Length: 115
Image (cartoon, rainbow, N blue to C red; front, side, top):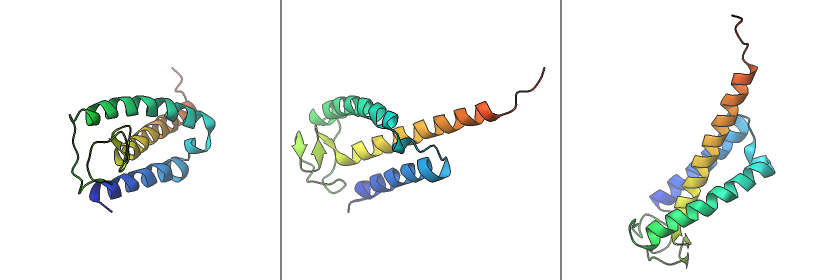
């Protein structure tokens, strides 16, 4: 397993554990989360695919799954994007949304000072 691949796997696992057990928001258990993530994923694939497909961003074959060849599908890529980029994107969006929901719930449950 390459370093970028291992880091992506750790990021996904950490985000899911934070969602389920640390923040207890359990977003990944709901249909709303997966619908929202699907929308984000479309735009991530467009942006990441454009950047990597045109060779603006390049990856070493030693750092990612696959050979590092730029292909639209296969060889560790989906719409030109390395699967590791998609994994990091998932972790980033999940953790951001989980913290947002957690912080919102804390704000609503805090006593409002009388004034």
